[in-house]
Length: 597
Image (cartoon, rainbow, N blue to C red; front, side):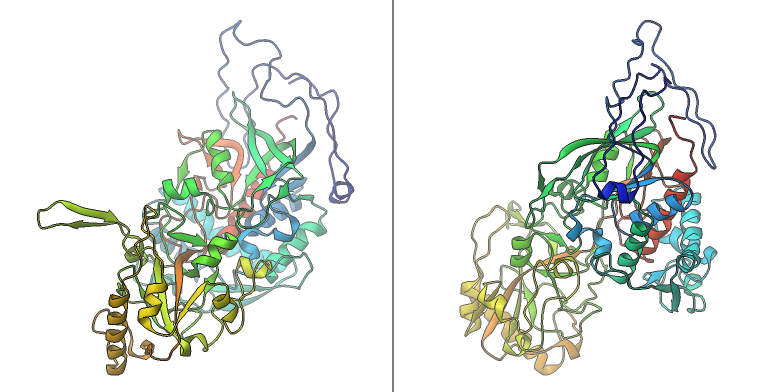
């Protein structure tokens, strides 16, 4: 490669905050780049194939920007658990680092900044964890080394946290899937299968003690964190296929709720001499990806997410553009229920404390469809299950002539029906999760503000309540609520409550609170999830794989993006995976030789 005429300036965080920007004029590179130098644990890649003589114009390197605005060893895209752990580990292994964060500073932290993650479940031993993780990957992770690497790195986390100044509180927990192979070994003595980092409280402006502490460690290292700077494209050498840097927009203006999009910004290029780590989350708020990838959920009318609204699949798109192979894109789970009107207004799931989640045990009311009918045991365990299939299943109804009378999602939308006793039982809105921790909206203590806003419908009788509910079918046609059927359903349910036995769905007797005290209420509710898992497939070093199964040199994925888990939420949780593979990616990238050496 030809030498650069003027190297871009390496920036410290202090210099960066002052606004110091580097400007570089990059000279022409050799038309056919040399083979990449192997990194730790790798073998040398074959030399790139150049076009025939005369077909490769001398000194033509259009894939190299005319100017690098910033230069660093490692670029980390995203500032959650995975991104902060990757940045710290890369820096502590001698690499310079720049972090790009799409959200404005008041909203940074990703899903990790939504007060999630009190416990890190890692199994009793490395080997027990491997057996359990192998089973609950459901055959979707064919490379055993990938699972082993995750288990080993998860079990290194406690010591790593301690080295950074935290103390470790060990906890006992049971595996999520208790009957699959490895579950009993994973549980082990139940004394060392889960832990919680007890951290010094810092002031990084991110909700959640552990995330705030990790962010403060990044800032203490004077690692530049460029907020309001969404990454847009990866810069790739067409011959070696290695990643050379990132194209981004600097200084965009966030539009806020309900879209959380952005406008403006200056197009910049960041040179990544060693690697790029994509830790920018999933596709929770990308309508097109939800339609294409989420099982049985072809529209946001069916599902919402209570994490950051800035996860819009950017990492998926950038990886696809450089021929990355995707895996685990079909996520199917249920975590909770949200208030649908609030979700539509603010663009983020408003998590409700109702119906048998592991957070709340009030058991109020019933859930009905447009026909005014109950259609499942409302009190099943919502937490990270797939039992929402009853909500979003597509229904064909046959006429006596065996013709299809209709096809529709019969149970969407669905309504929570309850009485005055329930509304006075306590605050419905969860006090944590993204929308609350960011101050976007705070649910009233007595639920009355939400009644006044129309999010909760109020009536003196059940029949009047049914007539006030306006329901639209999948095609947007107003179909109403069958008020008479709703009244019959409530009467039958009250009979079950009096008898202490749910004859239709087997709901537990202690949850059968009667609906008898006027006024009566209804809320349009929507199923709520935590996150998606899919993204670029990776090897044991978190290097992204291409469509032919080869590593894409200098490109890494970490955290929710490219999680090794498949269609169900993993039994150990996303959080230990994010911390573990963020560290792996940061350390491996720091160990590479610079591509411009």
